[in-house]
Image (cartoon, rainbow, N blue to C red; front, side, top):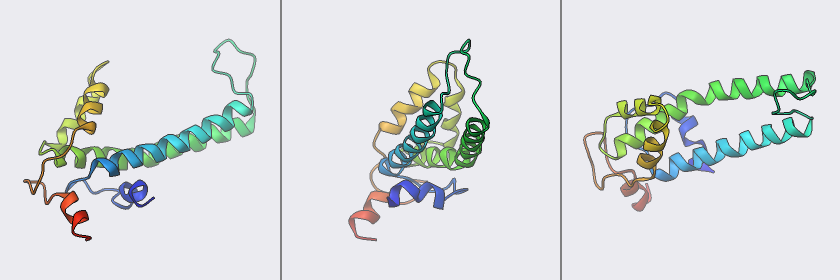
Length: 136
C-alpha cells in the first residue's frame, strides 16, 4: 500500500528516481478507483451508446463530476512519477512528452515504464533499489 500512495506523497516532486514498483502500484491504484467509478456508473444505467435513451440522472452526473475532479487531482502526480521513472533510466524527464505523439506515443512510454532502471547512482540520484536493499 505504501508504494501505491508514494506518488501522492511526492505530489510536485519531479526530481530523483522512482522504482518500477512505485509506478505500477500507483497505476494499479488508479485502475481500481476508475473501475469502481465505472461500475457504479453502469449500475445506474449509464450507457456508452450515443443513441441510447439513457440520459442518466443527478447521481450519474455527480459521479462523473467526481471522476473528473479525481482525474485532475492525479494528473500532476502521474506526470511526476513518469518523470522520475525516466530519471531512473538515466533519461531526461522531457521524455514524458513522447505521450503527445499520436497513436504510438503512449505505447513507447509504456515500454519505457516496463524497462528496468540503471543500477547504481546516476546523474538524477542514488539507486532507489539500493536504499531498499539496505533497509532504509
